[in-house]
Image (cartoon, one colour):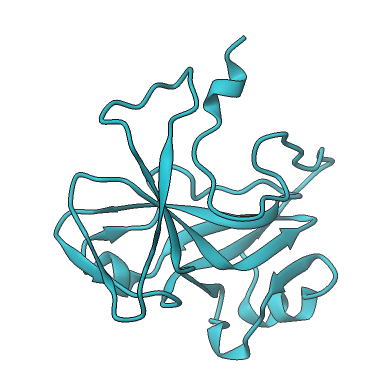
Length: 172
């Protein structure tokens, strides 16, 4: 089952942590998250799964930044989240999707026990001007049934900011 907004609020500080938290970002069954002003952009024209791929940082100015189609931009949420006993999920807001901006390609599924900022895999189908701190997505929570092992990762757990792919760590 998906938690209601009231239940998300009730579980804050205990099984759900959202920092910073604002009541105005709470929805009937989700919580809106905002886009931080920092992006990572890959430098190589071809990305290699077996290697770290170099990136450079870009700061979204207050007056906006235009994203180009066919290019991947890695962003992150302003909000730090931590979850126990629930599976967090991330989706784009419908108003963002209607502008042709995807905030994740395949990584909207979180794991129970995840702690950190959400990396956003931003891709647009039409040039779009984005702004820092806009409410870009929403997190919702599923209850989990049965015993589980909390998420632990030497790649993404307890991250401090935008993270590029660390798939290369899985190759031996």
